[in-house]
Image (cartoon, rainbow, N blue to C red; front, side, top):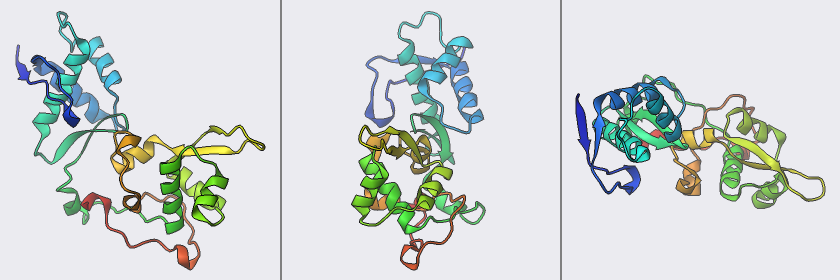
Length: 224
């Protein structure tokens, strides 16, 4: 049986104290599983499939360590290639290598830009969530149109997080898993600087705002 002896070094500096022998079948199974999914796949889901399909040796004492080592070994195999394995939005996903992304702009469609007002609203929600519409308006200093919220909802960047227990019980807004996927974040703890949120975001239905809210000429996020 082919096995890969993988030092227990995990992404983001985490480590396993002992060496773990990872089976080739486990690597291939996880590779196929992540490749087949369009959305990031959680470590828990990967572990469940490995366990159900015989991808974890029966004599494995620490199943979590084995799954972690398998992911680390797979990430190492893809290091330096055209696509890389990354942990994003609470799961694992293959993505274009950052240094190659700018070279694909001629063949890959570029997303439309959102208006400045929409991006400012998104930044406020990201850094102050959960927050109500009134709180967003207070921070921005201007009224918030329903169109802006609708745009962010249609782009799957925000979602309602319940209601605030105050008179009127206004909706609390927060970012979604789609927000994490778009910005390549593992979780909200990896939020970039606020100005880095002013980037191209898929736009499904945007009508032009006032002249002062015209879309910013900002760089492609894949080029950063």
